[in-house]
Length: 332
Image 1 (tube, helix red, strand yellow):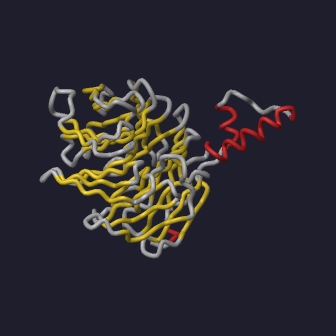
Image 2 (cartoon, one colour; image 1 turned 30 degrees about the vertical axis):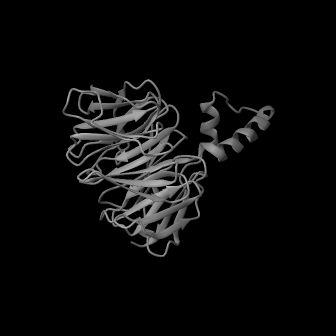
Image 3 (cartoon, one colour; image 1 turned 135 degrees about the vertical axis):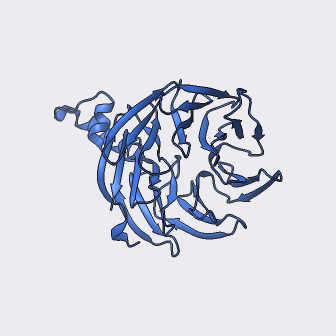
């Protein structure tokens, strides 16, 4: 895929969240997407038509992650209220609330059969929950981390998780084996390649690292963006030809998978005006110029931050989310 075919042209803007959007995810076929955020809601969209379909409300605090089953019938969410919610997509009803984490929950993922959901928390643990059982107790707890667990991926037989303690740990659930790879830098996001052979790891030293999943060998490093303080997504394109991720300055980067060169970068989120209005301050004269300058400064630091990137499973299409409250749809 040439850089000209990468999704760098804005096709739609999805507005509706009141506050920062913390995650946005395509569903399995890419026809719809889900988002969640600081306003305690989950929202279902048709990103290609720019249409909001449904809002899911039940969380008591911010919603940090959301994942939908392959058949699109159920979704799972987690957040600041320390709970994992299991929802019916069509009715918006909460089927079950899984309680057990001692602190905020950062990430959730269903297994391939949608029978188990795994969550990662600030309490330094992974917890697996049985969606078919009426029990609200976890069926497995993995608590060998020494700091917050920020992100996780599932394969048919393994749970892979990244932690602020600088490790990526792989749990083979068939034989009960744990393998730990120490990167020496806090990990804030991990993502699997589409062929399942590699793990892409985002660290808080503004570096993405590509690792061989079976050996833990470091294959490549990707730099140029800024990632020092916040949780931000990273992923590979659907052909595994490019790596993409957000930056704290509102930019999105594409790197060539093999040689790690920056193929494309562009400012995806930047809106000082919206930020000012969001604080309830309207700039209507010269007397507020100093406030405008201060807010512009803080917006550059925080407000344009790209929290989430999700690549379409088949097409040259991507969605990005930001603390500016928007989800943006990008096409080639």
